[in-house]
Image (cartoon, rainbow, N blue to C red; front, side):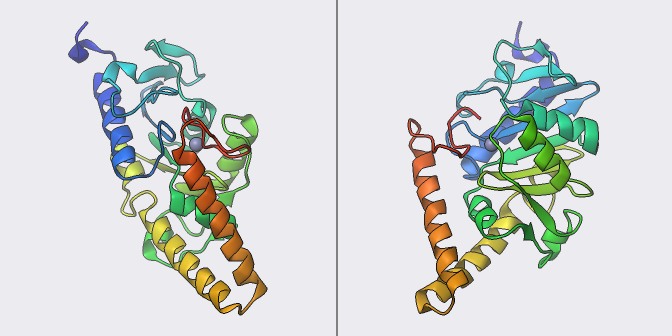
Length: 238
Ligand SMILES: [Zn+2]
């Protein structure tokens, strides 16, 4: 079978292209983060533990809405339940999950991202930060699903972001680009927090700086493929 004969070839090729863009845009580390899109009653989704730079269209797994693998030899991402919930509960046609460093740092500082910029408002209003739960679990799926109520995006505490769209292009770059608007807010928040901490003006500032340092530590550890951080989804296979 040639690539052009693959079932859902267009969807699998598109998933591959956006997965590689995640790496280029530094929204993931290693093989972390995942992407999927729906076509009819099937979903094309990135596999677990596969380097996106060397991945082929046939490595993209096709599952049904219950999660049963229909096409492909690899295991789907462990975050598949989260993706399927977005299709079943939130009417998504495409899902992008990143491990954006800025959004992860932001998630340590806030429980909600206010619509301080129109690009944030385009997610449907303030963006909720879903409480932390271990990757791949039903609890994480429930936490994120609740944060997505009435929204097309959410921040995942200690973890990253998730965005939904009618197409992969809109889920990835719905004007606001995934993570770009959140990165701007994060950068502003982090600078303000750092300034306060540097001046020793308030306890919140010093606490914020400690959290930022913790986030930086998480990021450094995440770059070390063999040293995932306990309690954080930084292992290379998700
Ligand atoms: Zn993840």
